[in-house]
Image (cartoon, rainbow, N blue to C red; front, side, top):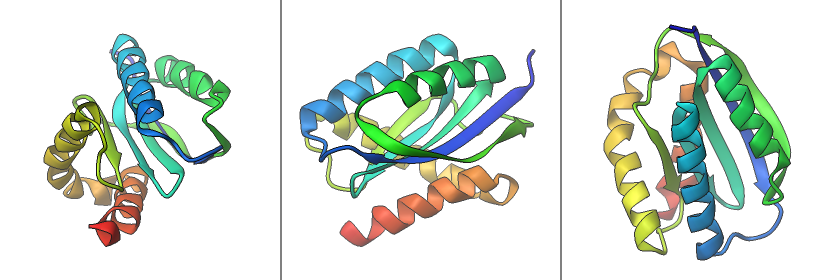
Length: 144
């Protein structure tokens, strides 16, 4: 089994994302990440993206290269990357700071919210996960 790699980044949306844009992004990312065996979470709020990716290094780098070419965002900033001992996510999730607008978004948000409490226990062992959860609390909690 290849060592696991993590990459955490944030970026700015190039324009406000419409419901259809977010659905397409969610579905495309879910398929690409599953095929590459990359897990993690993408959070969207206040026209910002924050993503935690984990998997084999080559697979994570392949997914990030695809992300970097996407026109929906700019000002990508890698916050952390490196080797990790274990996966913290069993799948890839997407969470929304504002209320989900479609059934696809509602289902993804529900999965993310079920996973989140388990992740809080792991935050001390992963600076990238701690940043992801801090982004969620800063963006999502005040809007509820």
